[in-house]
Image (tube, rainbow, N blue to C red; front, side, top):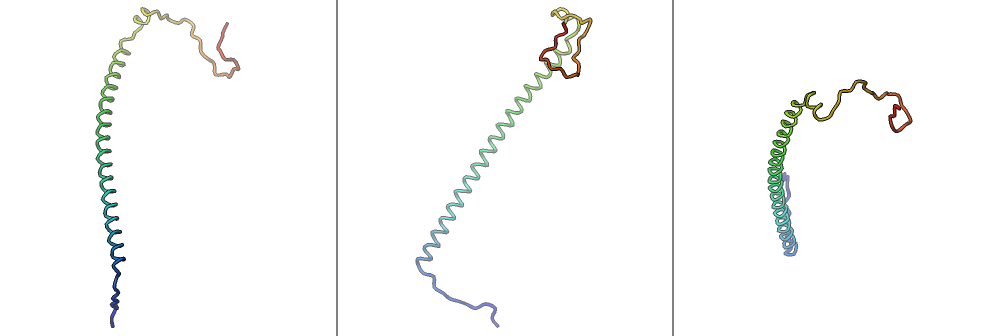
Length: 108
């Protein structure tokens, strides 16, 4: 018993020609898509490397600024504040938590 029967049918020249051009078109389209994808991947990789170097530069600058801020903050004391014109408060005024309808806080 045969599992497969052989059917021989001649494919016309026009059909073979169309199939050839379809295969060529599909191959060219695949090649163009492949080149585009590789180009995109390379460009994205270069852009990522550039961004990573910029991030490192900004991070270094930020670290330097934080160090300067901390060193300046540690230099502030009562003597410096008094030299700059600040005065010590004898009676502090606090804002109450009660809701008021006024736009300003006038105690006079």
